[in-house]
Picture 1 (cartoon, rainbow over the protein chains, first blue to last red):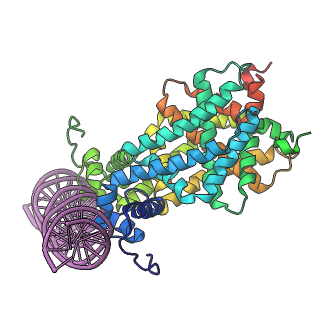
Picture 2: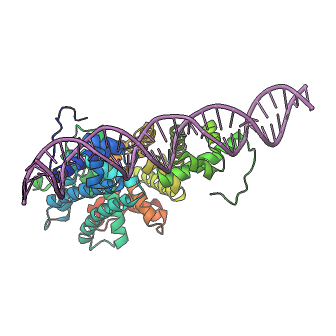
Picture 3: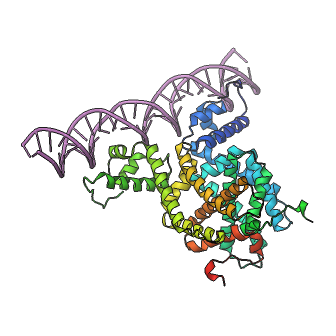
Length: 214
Length: 214
DNA sequence: CCCTGTACCTACTCGCGAGTAAGACTACTG
DNA sequence: CAGTAGTCTTACTCGCGAGTAGGTACAGGG
């Protein structure tokens, strides 16, 4: 681990904390919460274990901090990518693009968020559920906004949003096993699935992004 | 644990194995693989630890066996519910109903399958990925069968299937937090989402099961 | 050149849990 | 009533990993 990077000495606390967080996300994403050991994290970070405890607290605190940091990064990436004041389908499209773009460039973050956090019973699930809830609310609001005509209850919008978020998560996982596909293609597939539906796709009715319209 | 059930003595091996498997699914689903201890499983099963090892082998073997058993149960439930020789949408509908029916009546199984197995790196992921792959293939075949017109590549059908399966998984998780909803309603929502798409739903175009079709 | 504080380390303790040794109890078979 | 085969237990070993005690280097101020 980090054999070549000569042990830089006496760095300020803020820098070390960043290094430790990066190492923790890496290790947690590879091994999961329980299987990851504080020894390995400190090793990857290039410091000794007591430093780790001194700066970031217990293992649980460290993990929760990781989740919070990565969740925030991702929500910001999505929020920054979405284009409000546009048609609902365009908003959804830009959100999907931002989401898959983030996942593609931050696999480790995604692993920590989606795979690890969701299975640990403790306060982590709450942390993760919080972010997930924000994502679902975002989508649910988008749906509700575009659904005056259809008789959709609040619960219905929320469950549909949950399904969509889940589809995105699952497709992101599938993408990890087929990394050759460009992010845009994967995003477009999900867009077509949830906007057009199989019923239309079977008939050859495809959704196109605005640039190709008219 | 199991305080009331008076320790039944000297039962035949097959019966004990069932008890142990049931206890293991219960504990694994509640605590996850790593956090679950063989002591607790043997306790819940009402036997001592050496019996556990004598009958079901190591912790990893036991877990893999649990996954295999529950996965098989679920796939059989779905296969038994789907109606071949029907229109694609009807096949999908019956499959979804069977899936949500199974999840509703086997929460613990679902937890073991979806939440726990997917995060452990070892041979479990393979076990789970195998079942998941079968489900995806099933859906992919259904799509391909109904998609002569659309220019869908094999990869595209598979990724769409992965997205659909993921949507189902996610919606099942959401359902665990909103258990009042009947299975049929939840299944119908997903059916509408993936078959009609938001585009149609927004316009009030709803998919109906065959019984309501003129 | 001491003094205080902060970065940093080696080298432990200690509990938990996977896996086992060695034997005790029961039942059936002759 | 041996013998033997299968059920079942108590009571361990032993390694791994979370968390800590107690100290070493280095930096700046007086």
